[in-house]
Figure 1 (cartoon, rainbow, N blue to C red):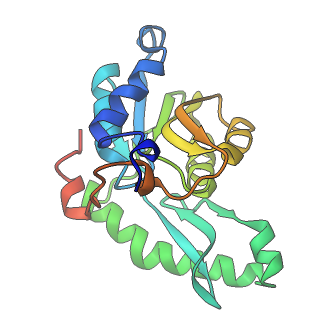
Figure 2 (figure 1 turned 120 degrees about the vertical axis):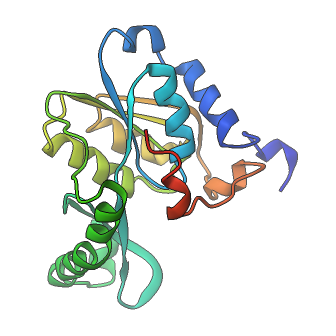
Length: 215
C-alpha cells in the first residue's frame, strides 16, 4: 500500500468522518434504526447509531457464487429471503434462475436461519414498519449486498431507507441512488480496488464478536 491510497486509519475514524457529512441534527428530529449490512460494518454502524441515539441491528445476508467459479458472486440472499441477482453475470455464465433460487433457499435454510436464531434467539429483524432506516457498512466492493438490504428494508415497510458508506466505487452511486432515499459517502473512486486497500487497519469481524456490538 502507498500512503496516498489509504483514506481511513480504521473503522472508528471512518465512522466519525461519516458522521461529519451526515445531517445529524436534522436526522435527530425523527426516530431512526441503524442497520449494518455486514459483520465488518457493525463497528461503524454502532458509532453512527450512538450519535443518532438510534437503535442498532444487523441484517444477515449471504453471497451466492457461480457453480463454475467459487469466487464469482452472482447473487445475494438476505435473512428475509430477498434475492438480488447480478443479471449480467448470470446471463454471461448461462446460469439458470432455478439454480440461483434453489441455492438461495438452501443458504437461507442452512445458514441464515441459524444466524438469526443464534443472534436474536429466533426473533426476526427489528420491526421496520413506518421507520426510518439507515443502512451502514465499512465500504462497498460492489452494490449487490447493499441493494439486497435496501430492497429488504423496503419490503419490510420502512418509511425511508438511506445509506451511509465511508467509501465506494463511483459506479455504485447511481445504482444505489436509484432506489434509496438518500446516499451519504465520504469518498468515491472511479477505479476501486477493494475495501481493505483504503484502510490502514481492517481486521475481520467474526460472528462471536458481533454479539458484543448488539444494541
